[in-house]
Image (cartoon, rainbow over all chains, first blue to last red; front, side, top):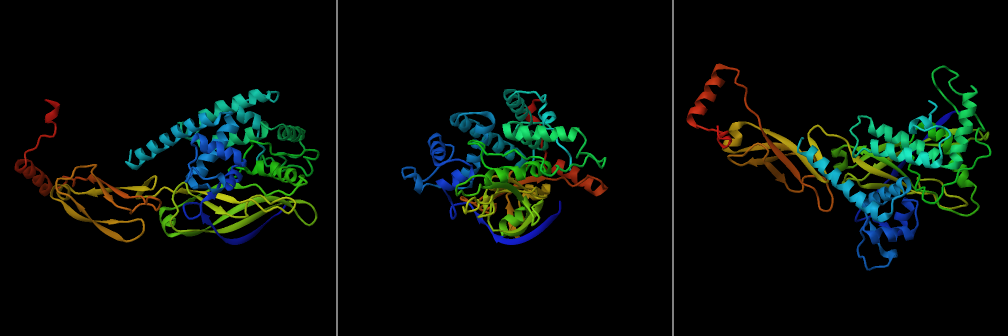
Length: 107
Length: 323
């Protein structure tokens, strides 16, 4: 079996306020469907503005994508419900924030 | 390439039930979760058990893996060179089709081993190809580590994606696709970079999926990262701390700024350089943590100066201890 290599130069887009993800794109990135994203919004794992708008108008940033991917893994690997996943993600976020704060203070 | 014993990785027998596999995975995932584990190699262990669970937790993949392990045990294709090297035999997985079930999520195999890619990469692609309908390819995920300076200025970085494809003779061949990715200026940790059309190929004329790269910051010799804020220890002399001073400080964006240390500054005092941290909404700040460094009393003149200071400014820092 031989290997060969091809090189392509490509421009990348940073997901953020200027280039947000639509609900459908967030679902695709997580291998899920739109209903699942609606549930994420309902339990508060991801936040969208404006909340009152239809799912087609929702916009998400990188933080939402990270939370959605983590929630998907928790569902798949541990069989947890999304409400429990939301709590685990909040705790995980707090642990990471405190660890980073300690490290930033040089401790 | 080393043959991976997935049963050993999860610490289960080959006869283990699905439930036993699941339980073993969950127990180990808690032990080696990078957020809670004290083990030095937690990250590698976590990757191994994730990979093992991905195979043993899936009926089709597990059956194919067992069949392959049997062939290897019969001595056909593993360790022939005596160095533990392994190549899956051609056609070993005939009769197996791998399908992604609902809830199996995106193909987050970016961190998995070469062994996994060689054994299951092709199967997964063929499984996907067996769908008769038009479907968009799946999105892929990986992480990319860049320096703080590169995050601020933007950088071009090469990443290599490995895929197993059939060559002109129909033989499976690894294709390394090297992408030179232009990462835009102003990315922050945890931000995702999207490479449209560089995920899994689509089926039946469907569009290819996207590749998402999660930005991580490489450790820096001066700055420590907390969210979008940066922290730097700023050493000052006792004289600078006592009397106040103007000191020069390098900023991550390049260049130098002059910072005022206030008189009677204490060790650990935090000075903020507004919006000089990582970009974002809101932008991060650069914090300077004052560290008062004593000149060594290693000459007669220095010792004398310390004694004179003690006489000129009598000071009892342990008064509150009551002794």
